[in-house]
Image 1 (cartoon, helix red, strand yellow):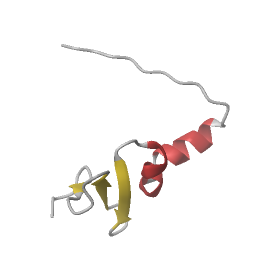
Image 2: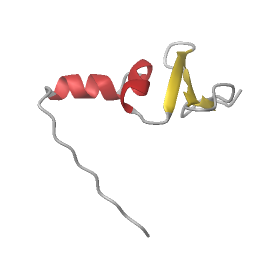
Image 3: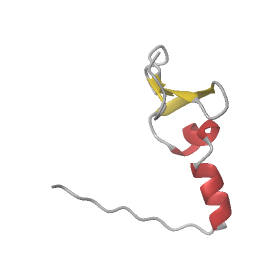
Image 4: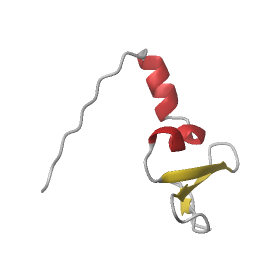
Length: 65
């Protein structure tokens, strides 16, 4: 089975990094290929990939609409 490893370093406090990574509204700031995130109900959101603004992707655990 193929494997890969990725690492990075930053000087930000670990709490700030986790807040960035786990806030779906901020995905477009760091996730290449995600253009827009729309918050639906609490804990639910829809992702729009770059180049496909009319074709949303369901978030994990959420039915595709």
